[in-house]
Image 1 (tube, helix red, strand yellow):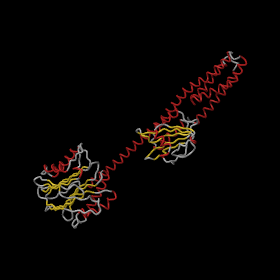
Image 2 (cartoon, rainbow, N blue to C red):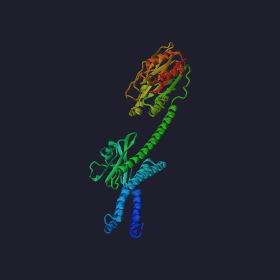
Image 3 (cartoon, rainbow, N blue to C red):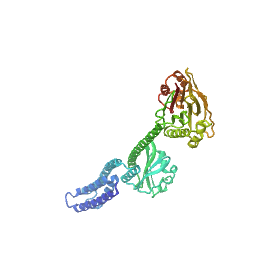
Image 4 (cartoon, rainbow, N blue to C red):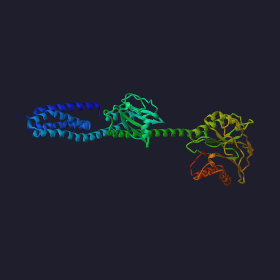
Length: 516
């Protein structure tokens, strides 16, 4: 209840009592209707019932009875104990507290319900104002405190294991006590309302915040999806907090929970939108780095495709013409998926492209040996490494230098359909600082193919967690060995997708080089 309105009601009831008392004593014994004037006291009793509930109506009834005391004494002296006027006055004395009790209890309940309804209605208006969360919580706290006539309150939220005072009203509040030893932790562990009085002598009461003296307190836990996430507390109500105030505060708590849930959903939507923007940007970056159209190599068919496990991924492939006249053909796999994988994929492709275009491909060291220190310096601290299988092709002769750093070895497919994995192994680039890599050579004949794949193809798993596997892939390629390069890429990808029912566990990449 608003204190200013309380004061106005007290003054008006007091003035009304005074006026009725004066009129009653002036009229007593002078008019026939004078006894009926006594029942004018029911007017301030009803007013107190509507404004103050049971305690207010009973207080006015008792005061009215005290004002009757001189009339009772006069009636006893004049008419005796059983005289009609005496009995009438005594009946009036008894009747007024009885009527006050029923009026106070009934009007008190109606008044509380009306005030609670008005409070909830005002909360609806607040929700429509698009206020920041903590400001909205502060508004609810103040409105609720005025409703139950508290002198202060706090909303404490548990975030990442720590208590934070999200809103305070009527008191100075700042989180000081360790949450684990505070009353807030105790209430949230019990997960039920708590109230107490005479708290200055209660050694168990340790607020999260500090401030003015607290004599009485009422707190209810706040929950989201059934889990306690904070509490709503009010302090220092005159006379303490009854069950009625507790029920009212629990209703307020449900509104606070609605506010927190709404803001949580808004934050989640905002976070999803932010992540989607990041994914879209990463996907755009990745698409710019991946070849949009593979170059034509005279005498060869070449095709490639990559399927990210998420919106973006860490797999990549590339075909580059080198300054020495050879061709660089490779498939890579950066550890990590999503935005992180795409980011480091872009770095990996840039490092390799720059190194190759600088014309260092003719040095004695293998390409992997030259690249590993560059990758180790840039990625080791982030615990990121890169698998890379590559070929350096002399298109005129079919001669290839082949290397493998942590990826599945390329498959050599002969004209008769025989298919074997080349004997090439090595650590991923950037995983070990002093790793040593070797290369092998291969003469690709007409009608033969070289196939590069990433781990995601052979690690595609079905519902029984059985992997697609190296042997199944080799048998598939043997059956389809004479298909054009682009069709063979599609057949391999489709087979792995069917095996996993489209549930990608890792990025999948296939590149096929076929000599015509």
